[in-house]
Amino acid sequence: MYQTIADLHAIAHEQMDAELNPLKGDGGKIRGKRGKIVETIVSSLWCSKGDDATSSHGKYRVSNRAGTHEIEMHLDCSLFRGDTLVGMVECKAYLDLCYLERADWNASHLKRANIACPMAVVALEQALADESASFVLGDGNIDSIFYLCDGRRSAARPMYKAQWFKPISEDRFSSLNSWMDKIYAQAR
Figure 1 (cartoon, helix red, strand yellow):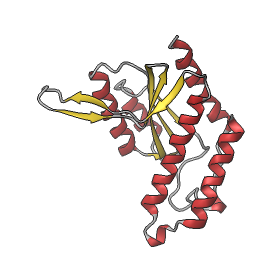
Figure 2 (cartoon, one colour):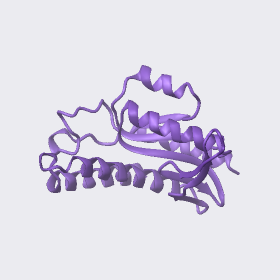
Figure 3 (cartoon, rainbow, N blue to C red):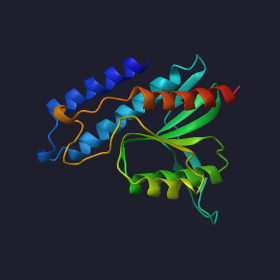
């Protein structure tokens, strides 16, 4: 599975390098497409676990703390085993503090709405300090962070450009795969 995912990642980034230009205002499109790559990776990896493993982009009704208003909220991928929600994943091109805080805020509301499953963030690149990640993870809403590529994000050396492309690390991919194996097995 690793090689399939690594190849998908490389091909998608080659297309971005050829088709999109941040100097022409394509920066948001690039970040969005890279985030979709991560969603595809997470969903594909999860669905490879077994016939009863499915991934969706479901939304869940949550109330504010006062209980006076409700909205629909979600993380990017809801992981199911059969009809049981067993995990949720927020997918990012890169993870900086504001993206982690938003994922944590969503996870806190989802957990308060009795959605009791592991919640993680998967990103291609790290863009925040370890201390900042530890601070946010200390609240207990997000259980894990997985970075798929080695090294830190550099705006001056964007990985969607061929000369700075970063492949998916097999070790980092294995860590995500092991986490998914664990939550899949626990859902029996």
